[in-house]
Image (cartoon, rainbow, N blue to C red; front, side, top):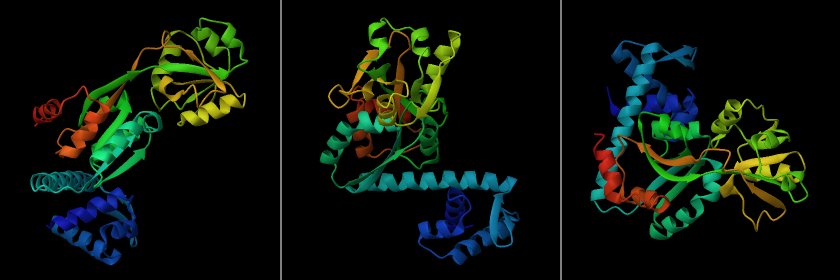
Length: 308
């Protein structure tokens, strides 16, 4: 059994059984990948992948276990490489951040700008997705740091550090009747068509629970993952917008009025998440501190060390 064979298995699984895409990512040939996987299967005496002719169509039961172990080995190898880079005074590297659109658009820019000025030699990549996708990218090692709300803390393999709290607001055109019908209640909000986040995004599930617990059925006519899309459709008169308060800018969104609804919904917490078994290079901790300065470097390192 060779390390590169496990790497090939891991990459093929990562690329949804597409050997050509995996070979391209590995900078090798498709026949070479197929041959090495077959040699590994022969050595183990089992099939990792199900086949239809030469095409991979699924993963066998023992193959699932092999893939999980191969993924773990790849993560450990990456951590070992990071240790070498960190203590060899290597200044180059990469940092992959997984986050939601709201965080990327409204909370990350200042931290990203400061980080690039601090570490111009580091390649920074930002992946956007749902909190579930963010969590999965951290768990798989695809992302180094995740930034998302609530659900990210539900994964056992992820260390979560609270970053900041936020609440919601309603946005409406300046001639909307709600502006003369204060204070807002859940009943008043539910009496209008609502444009809001998809319930899998940015605390949407929490919002649904609040309405449900109050015995009120909101009239959600449109959902989106992008706060700017929500505001666009509110401007078009499709409904009132329910979104994160951080997503409203009084200058940029001057065509809309904002109504605070923090008295109706509990606060949401955005977390920084990293794999519990990850080795974090210094610049990774620098980014975490830029976004959440309340957490010291020693505190972050101690939290990781206590999990090993």
